[in-house]
Length: 85
Picture 1: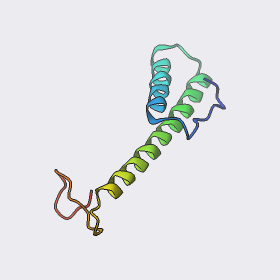
Picture 2: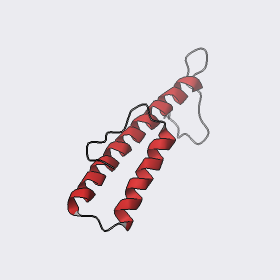
Picture 3: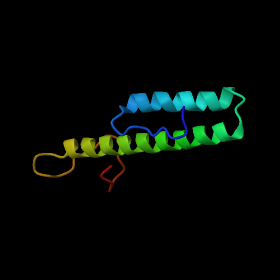
């Protein structure tokens, strides 16, 4: 994986997780020089940020779908009182 490789924001979440797992596996198993470890760390960090952004988007969509037709939030099972989570 090249140092300049940036995760494409259009990559599906599952694919980004798969790439992240590959990066982590290479870091754990291979006897890599420091420069390659740093490059893998950078790529892993970008993939984590991409996955977090995609999860945030999904959460937002879900919370919008959970709203009732009158705009009141629908309480999810397990949500604590006073929270709209």
